[in-house]
Image 1 (cartoon, rainbow, N blue to C red):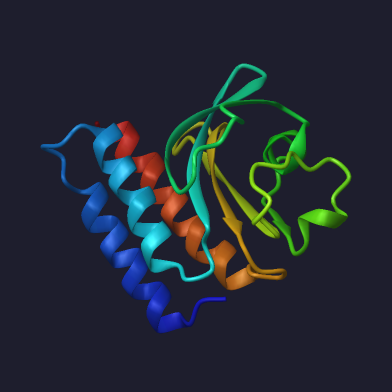
Image 2: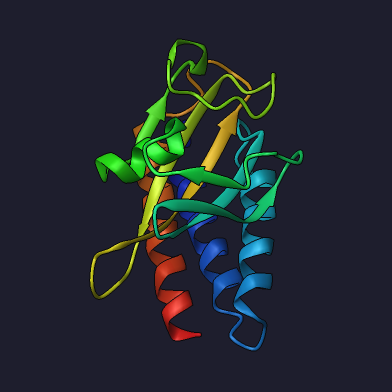
Length: 158
């Protein structure tokens, strides 16, 4: 639940991180995940998963380590987002029958898809875990959707 003013600042600073073309894209994405982790108060864990065939492979992230480095499409909140081709907001992961538990402190989750800027194919996703029930709403989805677009364009310019 991010105010419009804070969202604009986060988006602007995210763009600045991604625009550092002299740095490798992987470094910029790692910095971006840490930035989002630090700036979104209800974010406990922030990461990117890349779609490779029928699996999501963990990319840069900030937060505690996770054993979920590879997630099959259709499994968990992340895999469901790809299978349904739809962003996911889960207010309470304890009520999700398909949930892949990463950390006992995670109580809510949001997954926003990243699409190829030309083909519209899913290339990955931003995944954020929250340590509060109901931590995420449509304002978070809108912000992360805008950041996902910036990520897709930064990758294709690299």
